[in-house]
Structure formats: structure tokens, C-alpha cells
Amino acid sequence: MGPEELRAALAPALGPSLVGVEPFEGFAARVRFRREGATELFRAVHGLGNTHLSMVAGIDWVDHREVLYIVWSDAAKQYTLLSADLPADDPHIETASGVWPSANWHERETWELVDITFDHHPDLRHLLTPDGYEFRPLLRSFKIHEPEELEVKVRHV
Amino acid sequence: MSASPSVRPAPVARSMTLPPESLRLEGELPMAGAAVPFVEIEALRAREFIPAAKEALGSLISNRSRETLIGPVFNWAGRNSLFPLHWGLACCAIEFAAAFGARWDAERFGVVARSSPRQCDLMIVNGTVTWKVAHKLITLYEQMPEPKWVIAMGNCATGGGPFRTAYSVVPGVDKLVPVDVYIAGCPPRPEALLDGILTLEKLIRERKE
Ligand code: SF4
Image 1 (cartoon, rainbow over the protein chains, first blue to last red):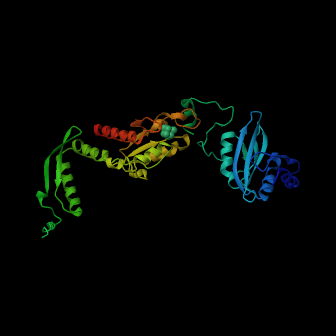
Image 2: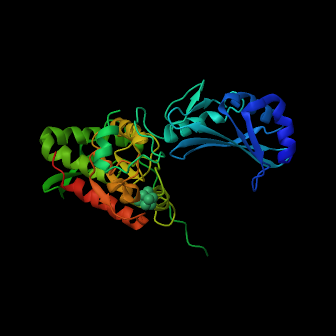
Image 3: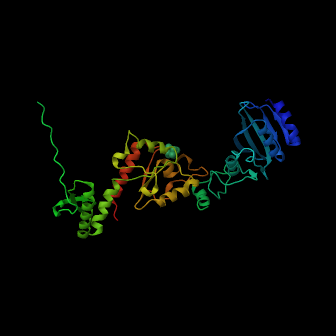
């Protein structure tokens, strides 16, 4: 399924939440969407046969953040990239774990490392860092700490 | 003509009450600076050995004070049967596994990896310790019965290694538990691990209770 067919299939359900569908190397297409239509988009993309969520990731672009989903279709043998821009001062988006259960842990990781909140996530806890860990290490504003300095902050959380 | 087969003498049937001469004090063994009586127990079968050993220990305890006898004996037994915890934290665990494989065979030193901390007296921290796993590491350490020892294997366990300034790495496991022996290397070779274990055995020999 090429970008044009994908746009035709997604546009009715999404309306203005669909920002654009463009070609992307190695993928069926790159779908840009607004976070308001996230759940509709996940359902529609899942309904097109993309039954496997390969990964969720986040990027800190300093002036905004971007959340990425890579989904796989067994029938088409193709990946599709979904991405949404989020404002840096309020980065949150609806969870995809209702549509793809495997999003659960990926979103926990994205939340703790890039500080993107996933609304209505069933279990938004730390995955790789200790409970109560106050840093968001993959943000560009994170400074490398001296180990002793970090220890004081994370030891007794 | 074939040589007549050698005939093994039939085991002598013994009663469970041991004749007094089956326990013999046979000189002294120099252990930890103290001369420790050496007991030879004449017993042909395991079920005879247990009451004999009980009796021998009992007579030794009554003759000697606990400090001069039991400490060295337990030290000697403990350092020759160190049981490390069978776990792996990062890449050093591969060398740990190799040290217990056929080629280096740590078991010839009486070192047998056990899967339960309650059966262990040695924790070999073989890899990067993150703050996430720190609490579990302390729990495992506390589950091990005393006396117990810790070997920090590799640069990561010693001081954080290449990840010293990473956002979630403990800069040395001695921040969490007391470490007896540090082994340098990234990773240390199995020989280095064996050397560390033998160094620990020396330390235990010199230990005073
Ligand atoms: S010391 Fe080197 S080999 Fe050992 S766990 Fe650390 S990085 Fe891996």
C-alpha cells in the first residue's frame, strides 16, 4: 500500500487530524498526525492489517518533541511509520496500548527517558530506571552528572 | 593359567555403638596459626560415619575452646567449598560462565555455583550494576547466610567501568555491599577470576573470628 492509497484509506476516519502521508525510504509511508486523532489513527492503521507494533520512540527536538510508532503488516510485509509532533511544554498523547498491547512497555520507556506522557496508560511506571528516579536522561537538557552527585539523588528513592 | 583374582576382604560387620579405639587422635594439623587436633575416624559405611563424626566433634569441643578449634575448622571447610551465587549481570558473566566450564573448571577448587542465595557464601558481582537492580542485589546479599564474601569482578563492578558517568549505573558495587576482592579487567579472563577466588581463600585463612 503506497502513500496515496494510505491517505485515501485514513482520511475519512481522521479528517483534520491527518497532517500528511509521505513516502519514506524502507517504509510503506510516513503518516504524520495530530495527537487529537491518535486513537482513531491507531484503530484505522491496525484495521489495515498492521497488527504488530514494532516500537515506540520519542525525540527531543528542543522546541518540540516527536513521538514515533513503527508498525508492521504481515500481509504486506511492510513497515509504516507514524509520527506526531507534541509541544515541548505539554508533551502528552493518548496511549496506543489499547490497540497494540505491546505498546505498554515501549510507552513506559519513552515516558521515563523522553518525558512524553501517555494518557490512560494502564501502568505508567519506571521500566529501566529506579522508581522515583527524577531525571529524564534522553532529553537534551540532561547534563552528565558526576557519579557521586547522581548517587545522592537516586540512592534512597 | 590365569592368575587367581584378588579377593577383596568382606566388610566387617560392626555394631552401631563404636568401639572406643575407632576414634583416634592422630597428631596436630597447623591451621590458622593454631595447632588443631587431627582425628581419624575408622568407619566403613556412611551410617557409621555420622555417629562417629558426632562423637569426634563432641570430644574435641569438650577438650578445646571454641576459638582455638571450631573457628579454624570452619574456616578451613568454608574456604575450600566456596559456593558463589549463580547469576549474571552483564558481559563479565560470560567469562564467569567460562571459568565454570570444562576448560578452566573452577569446581576443582571446590567452587560450585548455586542458584539460591540461601545456599551461597560468595557473591561474585559479574557485571554492570544499575540503580534499578541495586535493591535486588542488596536483597540477595542479605539472603545469604553468614559468613559471606563479595568479589567485584571487572571494571564495572569495581568502579562503574566504561559506564561510570551513565545516568543509571552504580559507580562501584562497594557503594552497596562490602567487597573483599576486586578483579580488574574488562572483562577479566577466567584465570583472573580464579586468581581472585584463590586470593579470597587466602584472606579467609587469615581471618580471625
Ligand atoms: S567490566 Fe567490561 S566486560 Fe565486565 S561487565 Fe563491565 S563492560 Fe562488561
